[in-house]
Each structure stands twice: as structure tokens, then as C-alpha cells.
Image 1 (cartoon, rainbow, N blue to C red):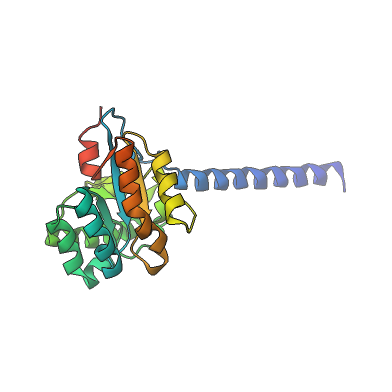
Image 2 (cartoon, rainbow, N blue to C red; image 1 turned 90 degrees about the vertical axis):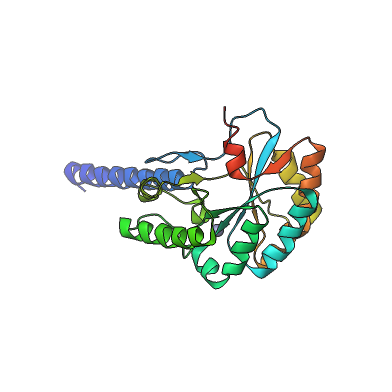
Length: 237
Ligand SMILES: [Zn+2]
């Protein structure tokens, strides 16, 4: 290898490393909970009020709604349900039931595909179709939760076009199959202003469903009350 080709090889390596670093950086940004490049996201609310927002993603499914709603009602708790448009179309009665019970309903896209690197028409369709269904059901929370928590350039811009606020979270469902440990970890991380993400809609979410009463009792013992995201946002300093 001549000195010239060595220099080119080195330059090529450096360029590849720089591209990889940019790629890794964008991937990190796409999954950041409290930051997006092209618009605001909320991952918690700065408040001294003893409130946390409880949020449930996906569905609605009969299994999830029938398990979660009675627990919330028994404990006098409110939550925000981020629903998938496709599933609302399949089960409009479940969305209606959540709303009739005084729970908050937000938009979790129409097909639950990753909302990164898509043409802007994709974002508009996913958001617009879901918003139309939710409005028909009587929901108007103005809240959007990205599928897989992923967003980069296009989604925050689209959310703004549709007048929606992107809601992430600062506490998420722990990876354990023991309901008591699940509840314990959620409660330990929760503090005033936290937004808690729980998945409870699918057959695979039995641990979360079993943990829910313990989560609410644990929050109560810590002096924290579970409310919807809308109620928590109203407390922002
Ligand atoms: Zn989801």
C-alpha cells in the first residue's frame, strides 16, 4: 500500500465511523424519553402536587378493559388510555366504555407501526384516521403516545400539525413476572409529576393486570394519587 492509498483507506474508515456515530446518535435521539429534535415532548410534569399520571398503551381489548376499569373505579383512580385506531375500529364499544367511566383516551396511531423515517403523508394518515375515530367516540384529549416511544423528525412535526401533544413517560413497566415485584418497582420510581407507562391489554400482560391494585395501593401509601395526563398537565408549574 502506498502512502496515498493508506491515507484514502484511513479517510474512508473515518467517514464510516462518523456515519455510524451519526446513526447511533439519531437512534438514541429517536428513543429519548424527554427530548425530540423537531417539537416538544412531555415525559413528566414539574409539580409539587402529590399526583402521578397512570397511562395504559395499546388496545382497547376486552381482556384489558374488563380487568383494568373495575380496579380504577374501585380505587377512585383516573388514567389515560392511549388507544390504537385499528383496535378502536374493532371495538368502538370499549373506547365508549372508557370514556363513559370518566377515563381519558389518547391517540396511539392507527396501525402501531414505527413512526420514524416515513413520508409525512404516513404520519398524517396514522394520526388523522385515529383522531377521527376518537372524536366520533367523544374523546378530545389532544394527546399522542408514539408506538414504541419512537419519534425523530417527521412525527413531532405531524403532531403539531394535528394539534397534539406528544406524551412519553418517566416510569415504565418493569421486566418481571412477579406482580408484587412489578408493583414495588413502579411505586419506588414514582414521584410527584411522574407519568407511568403500563401495558395491560394483551394476554402477555397478565403480570401488569395482577399488579395494578398493588400499584394503586402503593401509590396511595406514598401519598400519591393517580390521575389522567390531562389532569397532571393542568398542574404544571
Ligand atoms: Zn404501543
